[in-house]
Image (cartoon, rainbow, N blue to C red; front, side):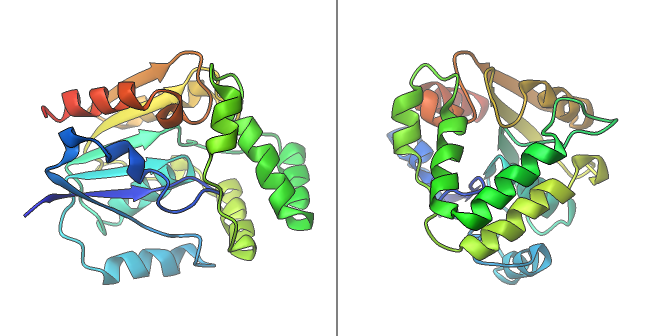
Length: 234
């Protein structure tokens, strides 16, 4: 039986947009599936749905941005018990306050939220540009991002969940060994937020990609695959 990899993508992206990472012969021993949270309008309903699927303990759980936060929360609740967690540029806390200064200001968040509510397709295009910014292949990445063109009402809920939730509220005691990727030029989640995860996760390995924005998996997928394979002794 093949070992399982479970993927949770980022906000505004199609739910299975991480699966291509594992489309390589080195990952042939694995079966890859993805969780779609954007079809839910409540985080607890999403957790209950994942729990109802009775997944066997996956070999790898991977989450990008908001998906990384959700992966950590599923682990905290013992709904998923992966052997390895892979995080791609998750926010420890999206909105800046006294605890985290390298975050988004409330006025900037409120402006983006309004723009998304008024014209979601246009806002997602601008979000794609911001995701790709500071990457050596920014134009190509912005064009290739696989954005979610449905569930706009639910995406507003998940945008608000990004605003509301903080990893300061997490219990990290169940977190398995973790491989962490972040782009040095990330304009959505500042790379310094990696330090907070490093302080809270015992077995933590960090890979920072230079000349890279918020999508290191699109910036250099070969480098990411090699790092995962090495970490998994494949």
